[in-house]
Length: 80
Length: 181
Image (spheres, rainbow over the protein chains, first blue to last red):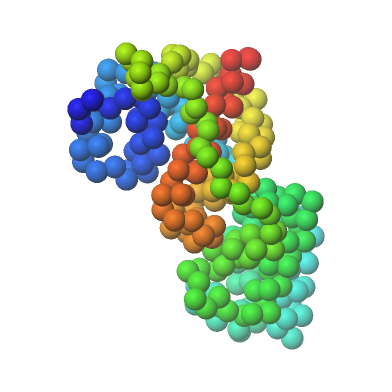
């Protein structure tokens, strides 16, 4: 395997760094080249992006008002 | 950060309320992964510790301090596990197509969105504890990688490998569920 011929297994190793834009220029280029001819890796990349989108979607910033009040009480007591 | 702490020193309740709003939900999610039954109490204790200490000297930020404290209080076993999500998915070294997908990667149907939200949450909880914590902090709470490493005390390679395995595991769970729809 030459540097210009990544396997799909290597692609799956590099995908996180690719998504984080943490690949060097050569790795980035070979990654993109592989995507051009490998539809399985294109699908996998699309699904990994979708997975990250769904994980980010689990974030919910609601707070139980009773817990918020409990902590504000603790703050008042601590600063009295 | 120092603004926040001096606000605490000034007995600024509004500033403390904002600190709670920004940090409480993520702390509760982390505590729930580490010790579901005690999650609320762990988070309460972490906040009283912050109020008692009044400072997070030597730490990067109030946020990573609070998350580290949750981790410490939960005292969950954080065993290192070998990455396994991609086992058997690629042809072995002695195969003519070594390193290529054993089975084609099937696209997901477009209409599985609701089901997959539940699957995402469940498959995250079912990961090994350390893996779940890394994925939660990085991909749900959106911490930077160096913040994740500092909270969980991992080196860069460990964090990268564990994150990769966790993401792949959740993607596989979503793929499996999409085949059922």
